[in-house]
Image (cartoon, rainbow, N blue to C red):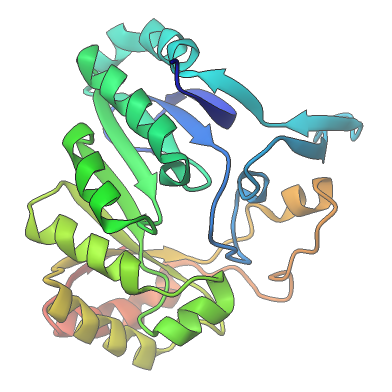
Length: 257
């Protein structure tokens, strides 16, 4: 039986979602509820009403697609992938929340000899995470907080499973980019940086990227008629995180912006 699932966008000619020129497929649904999420339309698993950003008239975000339909769209750009070292990226939402669907897309992409990348929260059953690595060439993931209770209080899930999966990826030589989204009043103090560094040593993590807080998704909350909780905070800039970076570097972590 053909695997089907829900997506909310297919973006061609992406250059920020992995190496080369890529096609990024955004899957609906995420178990986390990060208040700074820049794709709030991704959080719910089924299609939902959203105002059109241009006309401000009601529209629907999200649609059901089959694996065949997605791969048919993705292979249209295969010449660009071959020339640039690009490929397919699955993003979301949390693509592994629709595990069977995501796995089927990635398997088919590998059969077409297409490079695959995954943007994931790493919040997925560990055995599923281990299995999906068989079909993924490159991973982007975040660690949002080192403390499980603080992590749960803000994102709605704790970080134990996330830490286990990220640690596994690093210790098994997976091509992975780990990032810390640095968020005001959540994880932006120099003490937070020091605590991340201590945890990374235990996880065998030696490299991390800092992502300054931004408000790119703010307008989407209005279009979804939801409250944007981060409006009172100013965006951060790379220079705001130099001291934060230096704390991690002094602990032997290759930290960059």
